[in-house]
Amino acid sequence: MEIQGFHERKIFHPYNKEVTLVNVQIPEVTLNDGLRIPVIGFGTWQIRGAAGVQAIVSAIDMGYRLIDSAYNYENEGAVGEAIRRSSVPREKLIITSKLPGRYHEYDAAITAIQESLYRANLDYYDLYLIHWPNPKQNRYVEAWQALIDAKKWGLIRSIGVSNFLPEHIERLVKETGVVPSVNQIELHPYFNQAEQRRFHERFNIRTQSWSPLYRGGKLFAEETIRTIAEKHGKTPAQVVLRWHYQIGAISIPKSQNPDRQFENLNIFDFALEEAEMEAINALSKPDGRRKGQDPAEYEEF
Image (cartoon, rainbow, N blue to C red; front, side, top):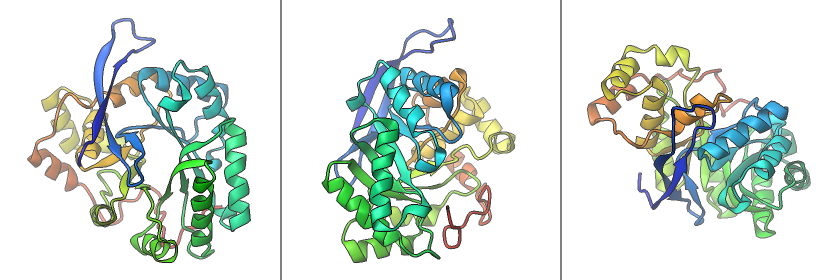
């Protein structure tokens, strides 16, 4: 993965008195439309309410600058409140949300984008994605045109998709001429999406990983992961997140635990060897999806 720059900052663990300021260089990449984003972000699925606000503020204070949300996560308000409570200026953050499947019709999509902004009390989103293609509904091109127009109007800085297969993306490009900047897909060592990632490279689309740590326990118990972690003096989670970074994927792990947030961010002081990368890649399997959600068939509400 080509790295266009680094965002250097001091990372502070607010609850662990034994951890002091740490200098961390968090690499950034430039999307195909010019927006620069960090190579690791903070996921917010199921992080809601007052506890969710606290967790997101903790993540921002820890050093995360890419915050991933969605209309269907029902937490855009919590994300917005966390932004207002944090000490980091809004313009230093990259905030993502996603359009749900029930609003793919053009006018409904425009309204949903506006509602996303109202909920978060934001003037714009840095990145907005179509959450799923919903091929049976077959209106994702219409939804894409809504995102294109919302970007022209200044409501969104960069537009992308999530869970889109190559045929879905090819149709978007053919019918609108606009290439998504990002495709956020299920990606972890049990399902490494090698072919999909090669497709992204051809179109200069950045790959984002949702569920980057799978379910944690099962993956972390793999002998391959444990052996590599012990060799490097790292945790299994750090090894897996480093693997994402080295395959060129932007991971968005989530945790409400400050210790885990801190751990997940600190993956840039070691590197996996080629043999270690190959060993982790060997864990992948064709049916490795967590819940069997195949974008060719799955329909999001």
